[in-house]
Image (cartoon, rainbow, N blue to C red; front, top):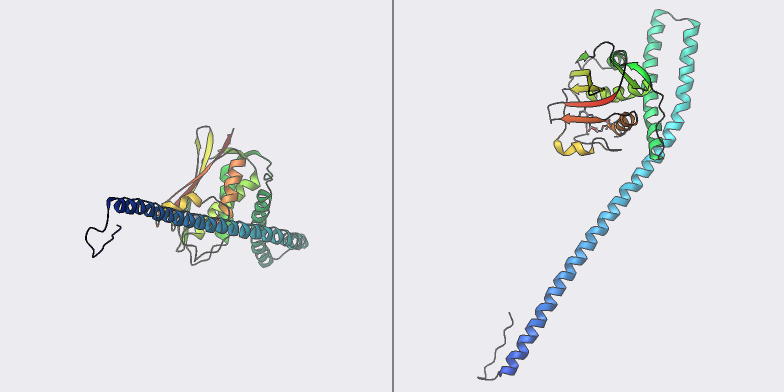
Length: 285
Ligand code: ADP
């Protein structure tokens, strides 16, 4: 509103009024332009901030990838030396107590080698290379049972778990054996890791549309629907991760391992209601 007043009566002519009207119209345009300009400035500030955040995240990921690469290569050699030492100890003959110790060392070594393999796989995928595979017809049941044995042997006594396996005898997949172990190992590890007070873990396998579906279900903490989209992304840890440690690489690599063998992986979960991870692989006769 433009308000002009005077004590003198009849001071303003029609020309004055016209002049004031045109001045008011131009002032309104100026005010509108200033508002639009402020909006544009705010929008470009917000975009710049977002770009900087994305660049910072990318730089942090690059630094993480470089560290993972060095750590994986540095760890591989000492682990290979330990493996050789265990082989030599066995060849010299062991007492039953010694055999027990060596078996426990072997399980720890296997776990450490798995972790190193995960890091090496991550480096390979970061470099844009494909993961190495050598597939053959494999029976699912024995691989599942072996992985469960490894898991059981290292579970602490204060985390009671009930395991249930439902895999038909003779059910076979076309897959790389050590990669199938790696996939199952990752899913089983997560099933117990995200079940802080113990619980139940079910592994099922069944034929499904010419393929084989394999499911790992737990009764653990579960996940909220908004976390599900980020589950299989690299370095992605979701939900409340304060109580656990991890790199967020396991499921990313698991997905790539399943897909590179011609399968698919998906997850279903409910907060507090456990999770089910289901993957498929080509069926072998
Ligand atoms: P990490 O366990 O190292 O964090 P993963 O890639 O194996 O990384 O898993 C990614 C995220 O998915 C985890 O941080 C966790 O939040 C969630 N997650 C994976 N498996 C489960 C599960 N069985 N139950 C609940 N959350 C899970």
